Image (tube, rainbow, N blue to C red; front, side):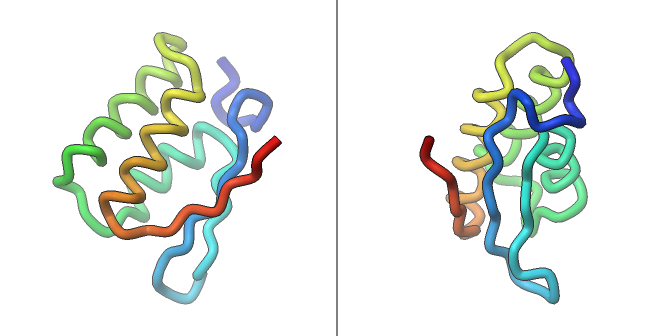
Length: 87
């Protein structure tokens, strides 16, 4: 899997606090990076599920859509708004 490209990951925008209010997540790699480096809390149940889902998707064990869905659930848990594009 090419986890640093957007081919299999539908982009979404996270609305976070700080100088960079809108954070575009367009690849599986960006999702993992956001969870590891930019997440406001690191002990929520949905957060931990999202970390595992990203790892599993990067290794090709689950579809990237599963990791994206887990990221959205973790964002909800953390109070982060998500802007998605519906195709």
